[in-house]
Image 1 (cartoon, rainbow, N blue to C red):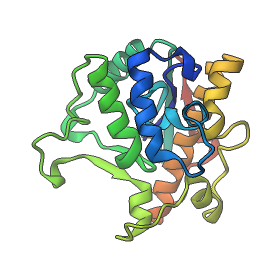
Image 2 (cartoon, helix red, strand yellow):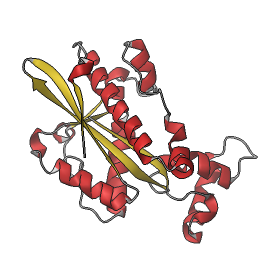
Image 3 (tube, one colour):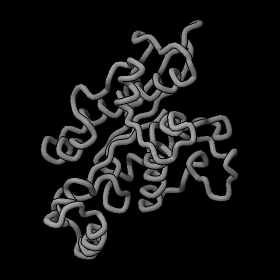
Length: 230
């Protein structure tokens, strides 16, 4: 199970290098929904969701295990202001597992988390781990699951949020402190990276519970969910 949190690469539009700023200006022309929206406003609101203009600040991973006969979930939160250090730590964690037997699962992971991680790793000159590197692989050789894709049942035009599915399946919510739209503000204004990591880990738990529900399995008891300390 995997979830990432991302923020814009620079605190403000003015902080961007001139060359990158020019590229954002070009991109913002395609993003405007209202004529009066400026590149600066769009940058602060939306840059974090684009790997070319954002960065990863937190990665949480969860692993199913058994405690006796009961299914449990172990969750580890990785976070760092230095993106290269964070991505290398994540890479090292993945290398502890046999890539052939490792499956990554996320909510909208195939459209967001997995490609975002790959792009930022390449930008930081980090070799892609086998489980993320899809180059040359046949579809059935890619060990990726996506709970949103599972919910679509082939309906390509539908987006369903993790929060909505958690509501429908009566899964305890992860949106009790912040939501995704507030992550950049918490990062740059409050400088509270631990708060972001905690939110990220809660999304991993919800995704794990949703995966079980989509397979018509009982969810994991709260006492069997464990946070692995760094």
